[in-house]
Image (tube, rainbow, N blue to C red):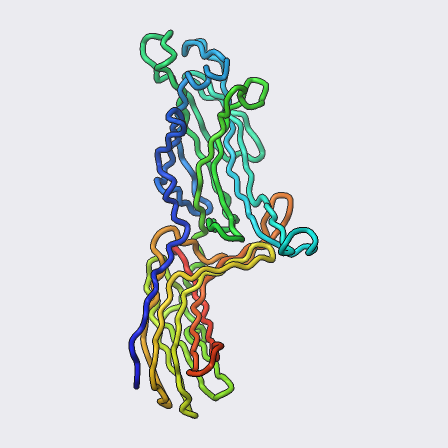
Length: 359
């Protein structure tokens, strides 16, 4: 039948938080730790973390930190921030390509906490996301040795259920989340003389849809036919998958006119929508190539592999935003393209949607 084999390209692992760790040291002085070492969280989860700030850092802001039993109140502002960046068509006179970037805030929840030595004091807020924070003196017995003193605090942050997943890609559109911590002065403003504002990147995903007890048989296959009466059918054994699963496919075609078939290409695609900006990424690609295949029927089996780490679950279209409302959506599908020999353009395409879930 002239099958010369298939070619496999390297899969693309998305949302790789290689820059984040459970214990983050910033400028060799501020240590921020969270309960998930890789920064990956589900919507509805709680972030539990600790902050350690040497008193010498605050002293460098031309302020004096007295001994623990006389320490002034210090406040910490914690914000969970999410921003969506997308491009939109504008007047062609605005820039060279007629597009402009838009930055929309999809989440901003903050809470101000007062820190004291060996005490816990909280200021409530309608947007409270921090349930508890306290400060202790980790210095030595020599209270005059401020070089050895530090402020340590614990915090918890609740992630809302409705947030769209992280899309941490250099291309547009994308959605990025981070946890921002900032020390406040007694007047409520940030400390002067140095920048005491720190950001920890987060990677957020929903858990996805629950797998139904009964799967519609019509969801397990798709087919299409072209102008030369070639009919291609793509069959699945499942429609719901977990990160790291292999998606088994059976591809068949009927070729009544005995046309020359050049290749069949398979792509596992992630697609996403932010406002009116649509993006996509190929997670894995495979291909069958043929030399003189003119058979009237053909069938083949193959597998496409979902990435294991930090793969966001499928996310149905939802309207989000704090001031400007935009629509966000994330999904997955398999694209199978059959090409006839001698034709420069693709001739027959079948798209099969799949669901990624953590349930």
